[in-house]
Length: 49
Image 1 (tube, rainbow, N blue to C red):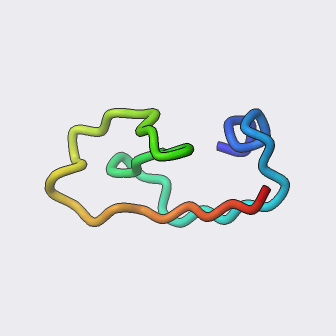
Image 2 (tube, rainbow, N blue to C red):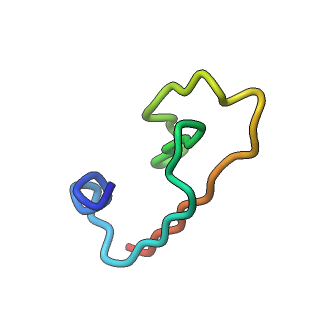
């Protein structure tokens, strides 16, 4: 995850529960597809550029 965030220019980031139900969204675009997206709570990532 750190490599992905760095590649998008992140300088500071926080991640919570990166399990199988996680969804990665950058600039409003979903970058991964999870089979759990409709059944579970969404994970939170916050970054500051």
